[in-house]
Length: 304
Image (tube, rainbow, N blue to C red; front, top):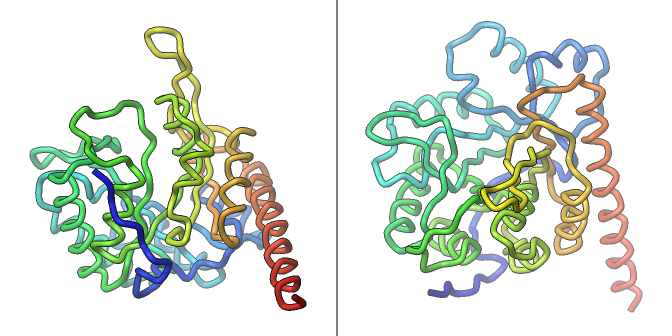
């Protein structure tokens, strides 16, 4: 089942005011180094579920950070793809956090993570069909109404396909955008992982992706394993530097759009600050090259 193509102006409002620069996922272990070095990074991103207490050291650090840097809040527990109603208490806590810090962007995953009132602590895959689309659209609309802002939806890392899927992942995402006026977060690492695990071209996926709706990009390292027949199996573990294949795919993605806010994610086996900062600076160098190319093209067009 195909989805209609979307005009570039379909979304009425942008979901992000993040600068088109490289940012990093904030970890409290890095706070002293950040304070001491005042790093030239574009923004910081946090996981909403780590800041749902009323106060304490996490909020003291975040308040200080928010004074100097734009902030992106990334949800991991709203279970947008679940068949059950959203957890209203959880959504209310997210709203409290968003109202408190007024982030430049709020994002969530195209995944589900709850069943029978239990949180499964994982981001689980969806069948891309009409029934799932109904749930996702309703949940995105409910979240956007509660937060009084459009949100970003992230493409998942995939380890299997569902026989009950009627849409491709990209067709599904396009239809969610069309029906909700949300925007997209392109996780380039997830695209690379899915392509490797399921045997398709990551470059073709990026070429088909609706880049005009992408307002943030994620990059991360992955873990390597093998499946039962010995084929490569990549795991979205956020536990290592960004691998070279992902950097190449990121450059390919940038070639299809203007520079866009890019986050380095590193959530497990967290390295020293200087290692994480170096990753952000590498992303910044690719953004600078793309920015220069866009400017050169604009000058050439104006001369002609």
